[in-house]
Image (cartoon, rainbow, N blue to C red; front, side, top):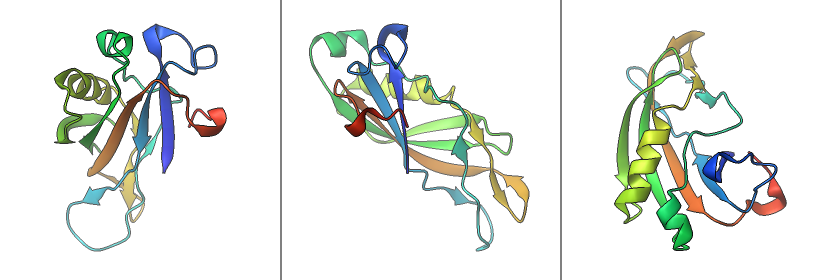
Length: 135
């Protein structure tokens, strides 16, 4: 499992660690066709384009949205679905909007790039990750 975080209000992660929205990539990917081993997609960048909504931040509201994203054979996200809502439309919308900009090393089967669905839990939390790690 890979942990990723994004800075709040466009401020860099190293300077504002307490102000984060974390996208925890539990990439449970499912490829279409066949039972052969699939090399899972992996996120490419250190920053995740998911922004903690300012109104929710100011009200000290936290939550988690579970997304399902389709990662193309080029590593782009072309579809996003909410699997489990945070209970706040603002968080769900922010998670969807940011997930569309995620980029991955594509999944592979037998050395060939393939399209897969992956689950992406997005945690909106004002607390830094344990140990202060960025991933």
